[in-house]
Image (cartoon, rainbow, N blue to C red; front, side, top):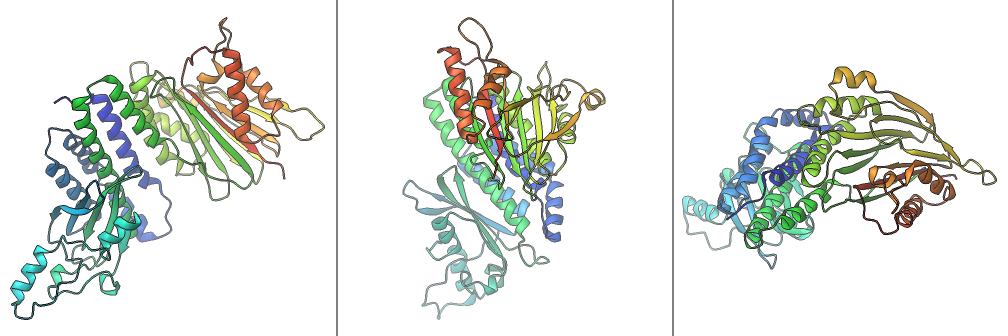
Length: 484
């Protein structure tokens, strides 16, 4: 049987790594949680090796039992657990144990009628029934609610049955759903930290949740590989790559008290190299990042995924736009080559000072339009910020060339970020849509919502192009400082 292209496999690998390493940037108040996350980060090499093995195991010519072994090994290692089990759902949603590793505790009470048995016989029965499931067991509850479950102290939980053998008692337990998107595939469970550690922490829960996400991706891919063996085509590869790429783009945007934000994304092909990120900080500030990877198709989407992995970690570190771009350029030095680069613009919009701080790495500058009074026309504010594309030059040059600006972003202001697909859209006679037209449309809709501004821009572009096909990936992100 044939397998997917190495490029697509690497794209999937990067997506999974992105899910895992997003834990690195999380802000935590609990000192123990923070320390355990730092310890988990030290396992980077081991995790990457696991991810590679997981992708290999998801191919159609690898027994599914090996895939289960990889999943349980990662869960046990990541959570520092003594045992683990994975329960897989059939087409009707009925769960059954697929694989148990270690001395897994019994999660359902033993049936009555064992008075005449010896202790060894009762323990043997408990071992045989370790994988049994009931609706009221931790596995059954997670399967029903589709939400993770952390039982820190088994002796205090009504969900953990008593047992005569301490080794078979669930002192502490984590159970997480295994999903791919909205599709429920099963439940992953880890039990009992080593004796010196009495309970699982929130950090362990996050790690097991991540392994559960990885497991869902791997199980889904294995099924897709089986389907592809019957439907071998580049179109199938692109469709699957597009599906993976969608998981990287935000499903929802954060809500702000003073800001209205809306986005529109349209790849030229099934997969593209544009991406964006909107972050809400504790003080209500909005962090905006829009980027465009050179090239198109699967190769561009692969670089987009790698860049996105670095970005999620950096964005959580609460650094300024120029520092973020400098660190991103340094991190991407070994990923980009052969003339590849990433143009990007990064902004921090502060609702308390009504200011916009912006840095640009070779990207189109956003359009800023301000309308302070209903009686006055909207004003197009020209921004000026120097910088070269990420990956174009080493840090010694990139860092010096990059500048950062801070300008007013007052109530009534509208800020529009975009990629080449909008500004370079062409009419039948070859003219470009251009920044001036973008500013004109935004000015006419300065009192509209962010979503209405986007729709007006898209309508104006399509009318200008008169049916001509899109020449590049298109991303549009509009942020308004709403007047009260």
